[in-house]
View (cartoon, rainbow, N blue to C red):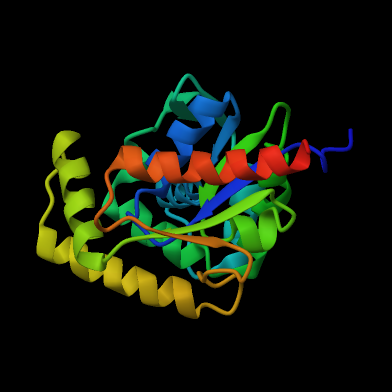
Length: 226
């Protein structure tokens, strides 16, 4: 099946920028499929920790990535038939995911898996390299960001609401370190692509950010129908 004509919106950005929340809302509004690419890396990290595998062994990590038994269903994520939706959202899992994402073999193992989510009527996806590497022909590319301080506050609120302990100072330091690591890695570094629209959400509400994405997409859709 030729999927090149299926519309795609990519929302890339740093950790805790709110891109996942916005992507889900936009996907729901448009009736599109949704891909949380970061969840796949977190799932590899979780499986690696479960197996007590070597985080420095890129070949072993890539093998784990290729053989993940994962199902996304009804807003839940299953790994080996067990719900792990909250398990992959811990800071430990996030840090490990950022580390293993620097390995080219791991990224290659997950590339086709991510592209398979491009199905009718369309796809909204968030991550670090969705517009640059996975879907370079996306109809709309967005780079969504916010200040590190605001992102730390958002992550702190998110974790507390889930009943997890969190220290905002530690969260800020982790976010800053992750930004540096993601931006400076040799493979698919986190950066705003030349053809991506910047969405700075430091002072925006969720609704305002969602409306901005929908407005941009509707403009593109209108032009293609002229």
